[in-house]
Length: 224
Image (cartoon, rainbow, N blue to C red; front, side, top):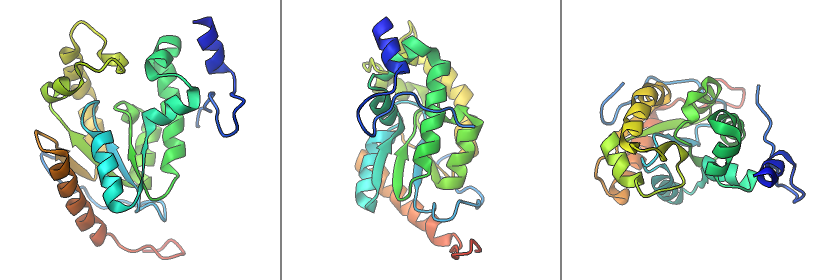
């Protein structure tokens, strides 16, 4: 493990590749939250939040393809920049260390334009990240019950928080902790249920089109 720790702490030699990320300084079913002020030019971003297994990556890829946007997965970006899988980061740095990296990558990715971003399930634990998500794009909470999420994730070994004797109990605890935070930042809340990816993506696109059509246009000087 010493070699892996040294790798995590040493900047990579490959151009454009780095491993030491800097530390940066409610409603059931479909629901529309009150209008919010956004960074100018960020109305074209869509950020997906929700617990592990909610479908952020699967739905996000389909949505981005249909809308002509770039899909980005924040967990994948962390792995690309560190060169190791997330479970290894948890093992070496603990959850606190991983959350610092996650907060940094959320700051970087939300500054982009015309993207669909699938966030990690714990991204909303950071107040700074919640504020950036709110201000820089439309936030969609993909909600699934702990039981549904367990069925989707029980064979996935790349989820450190679920490597326990009772992963369902862990999911229930995470849901109680994070559901209020997801709702706090969400413009839309959708219950994923047992819908197909195609059906869910289609409904999501229709709702987002409706919401975006009602937002005031932003002039070059930043005025509505």
